[in-house]
Image (cartoon, rainbow, N blue to C red; front, top):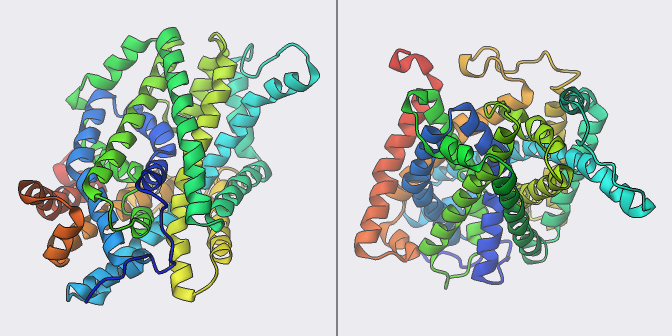
Length: 477
Ligand code: PHE
């Protein structure tokens, strides 16, 4: 059976570079700038970073290639594509469940991702307020953060969390923007957004990193990020590093499978996959090199957890030269990164709804976005009205998590590794070997190496880390 050429929604990227920008845009997001430094900080720095990079090269990169090639070979939404390849390979249609699991994971991630992105928008306003104000009134700059006490700055996050209305409004603004871009289409929406936002993002990233290098404790940050202390590693940290590698590369969340379907036949997938993985990892490391010099400059704790960029950094900005302007640039940059990622999270389920129910793209995007918005609202309420709720109290690993953390935990620690494991088994063992070989564009030794990583290393390593992370007592510690 010949597989279809185009996504059944009929969409295509206009060029290879358009796809790369969109896929790098999907990969680079809150994961790189909020989650990666947070996890590296909590897990002692160097050793975590090293394991993370190892996971990206040995597991992430081969899986990125697997997903985009399955998408292109299948030519539909995530579920349809896996089904098409399964049928072509004379395997059970039930393998389409891999696509379903991914779409569900992406959808759930979208719902809390948008809430966190809402916090970012809040800080864009906070940092920008006085700058914009001064611009219009001609008054001298009196800037946010500067001259504020630590209590005032940390208190701001508390105030935000205590206000359901504000959290929900910000979440609505972000989800609205996401829906609008996805509703506009693949080349008129997603591609255009990536084309503008990603280059701007890179320029801003370089500006803030350079600033940190000159005004902050750059050497200390380099030491923190690159001197491994292996005593800090435990099964939970391994599980976290893997979950982060998958999350950051946008693996197992339907986005890459879906974006893959819009790639034309002439594109060579292997180098494209490599570019995505390299760009994503560079940005994560640059984000670390941007954030930690600033944190260390004012003697703050790198292990501050999720509050790192919302409380710790603003404290640092308050006492650094031009800190509040840099603060503004910093939060705008995160906002751009988050937006190009959330559109890929929404595109997965939206493409499925378009294919499955034959409805128009804007309607599908609005429907999916609204349901995800609703789940996000519950996450936002988890910081105030529902702050006592621990949805997974019965499960050791997640017992302490509030609603948003529980969703983040279940998707990152279970659904993504499981999804990646299944993709590895499917591409490595189930899919028609000739079809796969043709799609990779790899020859001889490189194909063997890739196949080995996908068929053997990925399932074993991902399976093991999944197990160890979920059953913390397994190693007796
Ligand atoms: N990779 C994105 C980030 O790092 C998040 C994401 C996950 C996007 C899965 C799409 C799919 O922020």
